[in-house]
Image 1 (cartoon, rainbow, N blue to C red):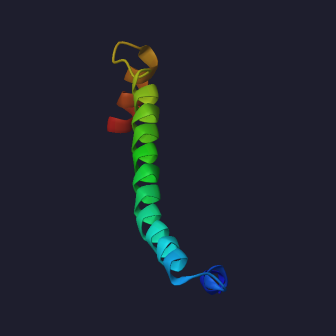
Image 2: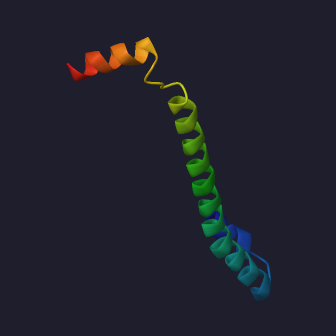
Length: 68
């Protein structure tokens, strides 16, 4: 419905430009979103891992509980 409304009353060349923008813009937006998601996932993983040090007694105790 929105696509039909966007084409109403415009010349064929303009509707072709709208189609090209939609067909190119979609994959670009998806790839940017995937890139941001991967970057943030790596950032948060690094933040979690930097506090896991085997010499900390809390880590040793948790490891002991999990492996028993």
